[in-house]
Image 1: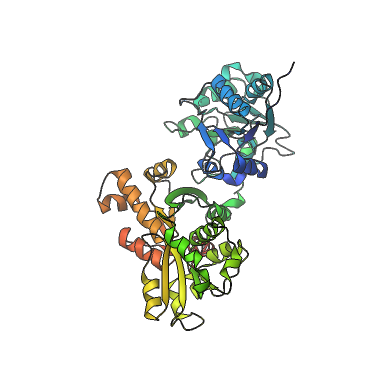
Image 2: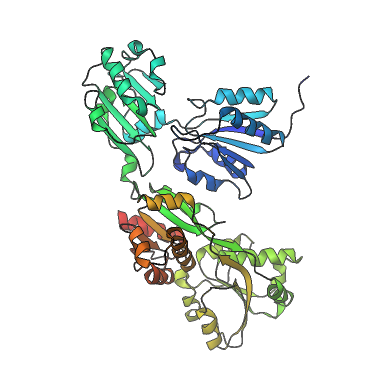
Length: 508
């Protein structure tokens, strides 16, 4: 008798060639709802930012030459979490059905009576040649192609393979010399073109073009994995990929952001060809005490204006309002001023439109352009608990406004630097670093101090040699100059869209 099915389900998902740009929409939605993520080492680590904060993430390796979890252990992990009623995403590189050992996992799931679903991914066997400009088929010189693994070349029929027009070989770089010799020994011409594509679709992509006669010497001593090999006359048809024309193509952008922040900025940059790495540089938390904010909410009717200068301020204020059993009707006739389009957009999520947004989206402009006299106006200002700029409050008080500041949230620095970001910085793989607030600059600097175990500014600055520093606006730039001693790009419009546009203009 079959066991009763649980509510858990396993999704065997292909992540594509690595870059988040080539993830399917189905995979994106499943990741955003995952309760458990069991993933291979070769996936783009940016995909880990798509899962909920509460999702359990388990790296099982599966990278050639490095430690990996045994397949039977992986099967047990998948089944156990499924039987606990969890929504499990088993994330594999490429497509799960192409050399992904998915059959073993499916068989184990079937035996355990677990629900599962297969979600295809874009295989590097198809995507890498296309992105490099190599067509796999041509009506005259390549009416067919074969995809094979070069992991165990001794098991393959090289006499048959030598007669196929185009070969696409995965996991073959470790055995490149043996593969080449097998083809030559079975009649393939020494002048046959060959391409090796490493890290396809990312800013670290490298391509070697040669012949069967020359390629071994050409790549001697180089670390090639992960890469695919293409052998055939189609290599000579290579054209330049259209993605190269995008302004941020071949650029890796390190985005410093709040830990809880969405990946919207990443998407904007990726649409312009960039490879992005997200580095949490802020932790947003509730205030140490709700007492002052609660008291202000109890007396809301006494205020003339509510000033909100960040999306965090908006969210914490209105969430607290709801927790105290009230809604937007409690605002009555209070007018609302916000700083920044992002803050305004966040406010609109609560079905409110601000009465005033200063030009240029910066707090300093609020005083100069305030729509009425500030004298004797009672203003509620929910803000960050510590570390915020005091200039706005001082200027309001100079105008004889009665300002009531209340802590609505606090921000801190993460304990340690993100591992992927740190590895990319150490290996000089980062081309651009973006900062959207002064606090992210300060925390970034602090995280580098801790990672380098030094207080020497020169050590930090040398790590950032040849890296462009991009700032969202004047106040953030000021902090960049204080700590990093330069700013290369500053947004003209002080929004993430404006910062994106600034990068596009600089690199076009």
